[in-house]
Length: 145
Image 1 (spheres, helix red, strand yellow):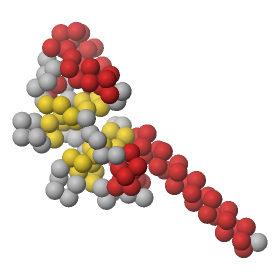
Image 2 (tube, helix red, strand yellow):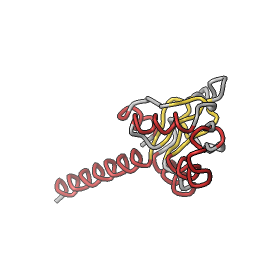
Image 3 (cartoon, one colour):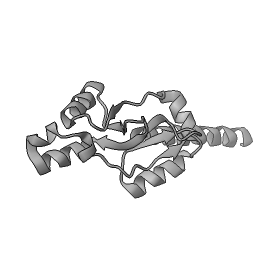
């Protein structure tokens, strides 16, 4: 199964904010949308980084409440691992496991942000795929027997 099939089910909405937004604004947006990560864009609208709940916790641990007034660009992860719509769920699972991250932005054929996949999306898809395969095998065995 490919990433594009995950996006068909979950949708393509990606919550973004600009790199000069404050950490306080970012935390309010994370809470309001009930999500674990935000995509950060630069002034040209290009993907500049990702800000996760973990980044927020690290910022607060290092600088306490003063971190909330600083821009997200000070705390975001800049070296963002991405995938394409044509990558497989297996490839994505391996990437997320090796990199130890829970969110991967999806880029289209023009390298434009077109979705976001979480580890929850990947696990759900993998379980559904495994369940379908098991049911097919049971049907095949029952028909052959």
